[in-house]
Image 1: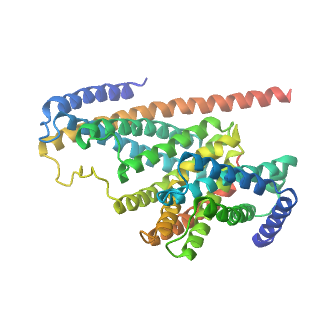
Image 2: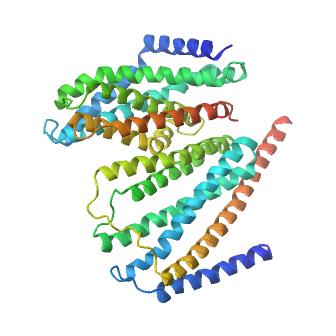
Length: 229
Length: 224
């Protein structure tokens, strides 16, 4: 590992320790929800990282279609995988919070459902990457990456309409009241820490994917050279 | 060769093949019949509440049946390397895609026309809202399923275990379209609310994804 990236990893670890301490001990306890509200400091930053990852995947997919560079494909693969991981964290931490606060694990509200559909779309993207054969994988995955991202606003629109027609009984968990400055402070630290973790994971997954792509290309070259003899 | 000529000749060829073999339509018909019968065991189909879920049921049956036909779309072009021949020919790729979409669209519409009376009889349906809107929804919804389905079928024939792959990538992307079809149909059957928003939604979905498909099909056809 290069010294610069090692330094970044150490910095991120320190930051993560600091922000976790802030979230668990420094941030004021929420009046009505109590300690369970602290999950917010993990939930929202994870959602942010997942969203950024899916955006990166979309841009990298377009770049691959236009330029056919295997690096763009590696970035798309890495960001989709990390995005699914963080999206899974969002989907797990959400119900843990919802159970004591709303009284139910899950409600088919617009944001929850959109997140779930988003997760489904990118899991299908990862499945396609596994099932596609050989060098076609890159292109097929890039195409699905574009489809998936284009679908997101349509999913959100449709589900919001679906739910506003039939209001769900346990809603009212919105944050339109704004965040306490002390909470906002802690939240921003966590946001920074999670973003750094996301960058590290994506970067190392990207390196790995590039090595895999190179290895595959080398195998293909060897097979061709052997066949010519 | 112009797009229209290629589209027409490919479409006519597909229709002729289907007319002679009737593979797609027979398997779709039998499949959706099975879905209708099996669903009727899950709940009391003649109860008044079942009107509320009839919209969902009809579309789920058509969706599953359409997948059966969509999987066969490109498979027959793989035999004798028809797709490879198409690739090296100067014919525009989108003409082939449009022909396939139109063909599948016709098959699924025929399926819906044949199955609709059966649904009405088995589930004792009668429409409270205007019936012409149901037809518009059926056409828009079928296009939404078929345009993406045909595209993803072309994508999944290049993967291992291609028959499993198609629903896995088609269903998540189709969720908004399916939601729109189901809710619009239910709101007409029950007469509770206006399906106006859902019809616009389907139209937007159709336009957006038809554009994306036409934009990307050539790269998928030529994928190495």
